[in-house]
Amino acid sequence: MRSALGVGSAESALAVLVAFLGLPAVVIGVLRFGTTERAPAPLEEVADGLAQGVREQWEAEARVRRLNDPRPLPVAWTAADADLAEPWSLLRELAENWPGGPPSDPSKWAASPGGLAGKDAEIDQVFSERLPTRRLVVLGEPGAGKTVLLIRLRQALLEHRPAGGPAPVLFSLASWNPARQDLYTWMADQLARDHPALRDPAPADPVQPRSGTRAHALLVHRLILPILDGLDELPEAVRLRALDAINQGLPHRQPLVLSSRTAEYRDTLNSSAGTTVRLNGAAGIRLLPLDAAQAIAYLQRDADGPDTAAAARWNRVAASLGTDLPAAQTLSTPLGLVLARTIYNPRPDESPAHLAHPDELLDQNRFPTRGDVDTHLFAAFVPAAYRPDTWHPSRWTARQARHTLTFLAHHLEHSLGGTADLAWWQLHKALPRHLPALVAGLVSGLVLGLGQSMWWEFLVARCGLALRPRAAERTAASGGGVPVPSPRSPASPCRTPSLIGWQLYVSLVTVCGCRGPGSVSPERLPPVMPLNLPYLPGTGSCGLTCVKGLHP
Image (tube, rainbow, N blue to C red):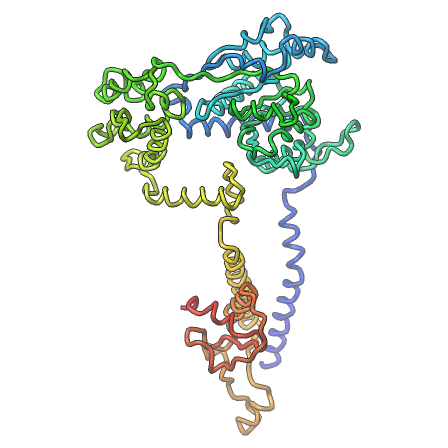
């Protein structure tokens, strides 16, 4: 009987050992499943897939920003001042003499810069047909709607894009440091960050044998139409360098769009050396303020129509539009309209009586300047956006939202150098330096400790292993040849060491940076520690201090 049990235990142990040795092969097989190498897709198909992804991404973004609710924000523009763009005759000459012919039908080109003026959906026609070189600078004042116009242009270009053609992609220049990265490298990094599939190697190309990733290859083969938003968001000291890098990296035949505030762009062009640097081969347009009729129509339509009680709340403000009053100046921009409608217009399930009245914007004692009105609207926006909503309840209160947004703003200003680009993968930089290491130590300790403990229990259950005193001591203690049960036999609940506690201890000692040698006797351990936590000599007491209070 004992022999049979011994054979059975040996067979079980052997089975476990074989299974354990075969585990790496199984894991490798699982990891490799579904990763059979396939021939890389042609770059034109990669561009098609990117265009579809960009379309879906920005359609969702337009819904979040309510760009089409209740209707698209009205935007109009005129030609930029002559000193901010290339001469029109030069643009025509460049396009006519490009290798392979002009990029568009010359019969549709505007006769002069004045032909670039337009509004709303005409931006696609301006860029694709009226502009000979298809290189455009979009200028405007703060809040004038530059980014909104770029989103419209990109959506229109996607709608009319032929299969295998360039994919229009919007890049926020605020995250670019031209002193550290060339333009192509930065754009390739942005593409790979936002579209992970573009990190894969590019298909073999005899013309460009070292095309690198798909993202870089798309740029090299001009299958990306860059829309560069916010030159003014770069630090003033590097704007001229950035403009020069754009000229060098994106030559004349490469279509592109660049946006900036007007004053900052003019300052960039006029360098301190007295020379003028323009975006090569580019024309310019300047966004116009909204007229009074457009602004009030937008606000009243958002308030359920011009004949409703909610719309009538805007009557006094409407009479002030077109004047020099601070409120009228603020409401002449799309940004001001969006803020005002969110604060003062009721939702479908709300009563206007419970909201602030827009007439307060006309109080010049409270708001003597446009800046005062802007500050008030920004301060009131978050509470208005997070006020209770019966149809779409929010997970957060206005107080929670303000606290979080203040934290993020501080993070952008002080941790990321003042950039306006908020990326979730950079949020770890907002945490105290030791916190990520502490969390990593805790998680790794729990995972590894739990895994080791479960494996040990499995060996005990399958192979009869247990921690017992040495055989000679057991025999002497029993006074004969029959071993006595060990104090740590299976009958005892503490038969195995707490590997979880041990792993937590090691992890915490590591992340806390404890280096001091020392010796702590088991009886001096804090009472909150598990009694079966083994003592590790030479680690000092910092690890114990860290874990104190974590153990139940």
